[in-house]
Image (tube, rainbow, N blue to C red; front, top):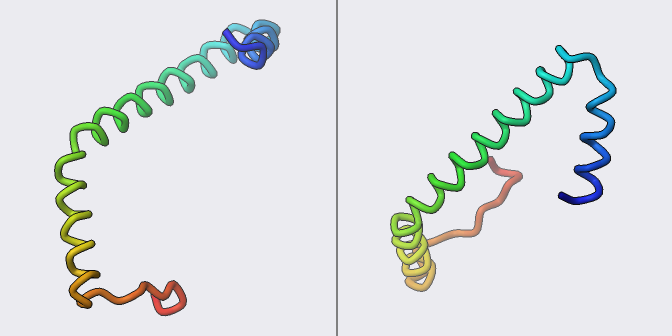
Length: 72
């Protein structure tokens, strides 16, 4: 465990039990969400690679234009 996490947990232990539970639930949900997105991203690599190749081909062929955020 890192010293930062150790410090955070030490501070959490001083909170009332219901507050500790609330924070623990939030943290567990965040970790589950992160795991979900990691799996989703890993599963989409072939599709993303295909799209990137298509975009590079479009740009090389001169059929792409630069995105101007001010015109969105």
